[in-house]
Amino acid sequence: MSSPENDSEISDAARVLRRVFGYDTFREGQQEIIEHVVGGGDALVLMPTGGGKSLCYQIPALVRRGTGVVVSPLIALMQDQVDALTGLGVRAGFLNSTQDHDERRLVEAVFLAGELDLLYLAPERLRLDSTLSLLARGDVSLFAIDEAHCVAQWGHDFRPDYLALSALHERWPDVPRIALTATATKATHAEIASRLNLGAARHFVASFDRPNIRYRIEPKNEPKRQLLRLLRTEHAGDAGIVYCLSRSSVEKIAEFLTANGVAALPYHAGLDARVRAENQARFLREDGLVMVATIAFGMGIDKPDVRFVAHLDLPKSIEGYYQETGRAGRDGLPATAWLAYGLQDVIQQRRLIDVSEGDDAHRRRLGVHLDAMLALCETVDCRRRRILDYFGQGSVACGNCDTCLSPPEAWDGTVAAQKLLSTVLRLRRERQQSFGAGHLIDILLGRQTPKVAQFRHDSLTVFGVGTELTESEWRGVVRQLLAQGLLAVEGDYGTLVLTESSGEVLGRRREVLMRREVKVRREPAAPKSRGAAAAPAELSEEALPVFERLRAWRAATAKEQGVPAYVIFHDATLREIATRSPSSLDELSKVSGVGESKLAKYGQQVLDTLGA
Image 1 (cartoon, rainbow, N blue to C red):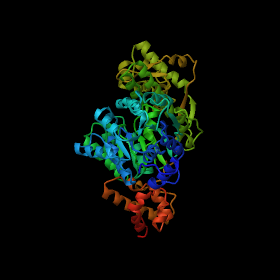
Image 2: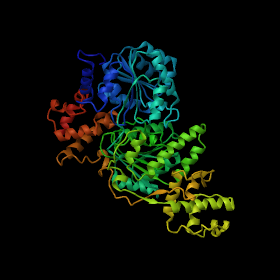
Image 3: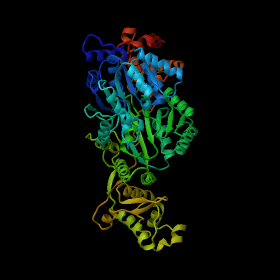
Image 4: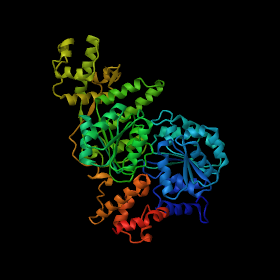
């Protein structure tokens, strides 16, 4: 399959696109990238999740002579990636630590015989002399470095083994390299280019916009119940991912959802490796499962029908948040990115930065990342515009995020800020004391609590001066002062202290605008659905039962073969089949996503299902 044909190289690429993958046209940006790599050029590609990055190296590997070597950190997913390619008729294999000696020897022999189109390797294998010797004895058509942001030293997914990949160019200077990632700021982009020695490569930066994803951030108020309400009212039976910061939270949320009738599985680094692998396999292969996980889960998850990604804890950066939310809606259908965010999140993240490894400069970088994330949470502007601005891509208001659909009010919180900051100041100056948010709010509301009585804080001049706001509103004030750097967290107990900027507010030299939450209109982020069918609303009444029959056939076939359902056909392909109702193999071959191999394997079964 890897031998070039007589026409021009890009014609070969278009032919492979149709014959192997079943598509008639390239997505935006793909053709130019593929043509460049097929011609032997190096490339650095920034393209959002679901934008078709994998074709940018898979097609050149099929057109060029030799084997495309794909460096991927996703050992647990290599089998599924190879299964998907094998289902397309591509000769693919992998080498990683999950294989025994005989399995590795077989793959090595096939590679050396020139009978592999694509070979997947974990980055740590390229540190082994035996792997480098193997590649030197074979015929490598290109090197693809997937998830290239892992090379960023202080990034959210840093992998030390990626630092050694710059040596590929030194050892194989004539073999083109293509590095790909879904998310990168300008700084991360520059770091990838520098560390992978891709300064002379051609850089391709696509729009990061994912218009099918609705971004929603709401204040925490019984987050477990908020999450359950989201799943029951908008995503009943849908596949989705729930991210938590700690392992214990993962376990508790998975148990809570299961107890309330939601099929949920836990995933975190503390679980037995076998359990993690089983849970991941179930999530990929079964419809309608919810994975509750730490950020250890998700990179490279090629499951197209994830209808929501929910965060129950504040992400550390917009880069990490965007990478995680990008796992929703890979099929282009409506999806939800939902985050519950509260005062304790801000305190916790500030404390984590204070105790983090690295020097002061590193902690300052972490602080800058968190500040941008907090600004996204507190904005009264369009969420999507904020995200795209962060990545250096301007945009207009999207009309499809919570702040566009239910615009919040901005209010002058200067007086409220002065009252709270004054409380912190008086406790420190007059009593040499500092306290957390809860006690400060009790003082402002004039509550006679045991702690107030113990420390005689009812004698302070600020006692009871804040009754114009509720406790919830005061917590919002504290949260936003922390977000704006007008308060800081100190010590292990989350006590609040003033910052250098606090004096500007107390001295009436700075106004403080704040976001007032409004009651969110119940605007579903995606059509209500039953199961991972995700209610294909565009289907006609006649086509819908046909689509369901096709899904049932696909599920049975996938189970029989032990592969995820999307390896057989994506939902988008089944929808088109249900709508067009082809009556012959020739008509079926014209459906997007039906290549030669799948037509031969499944064509008659599809026609039989249509005729059932």
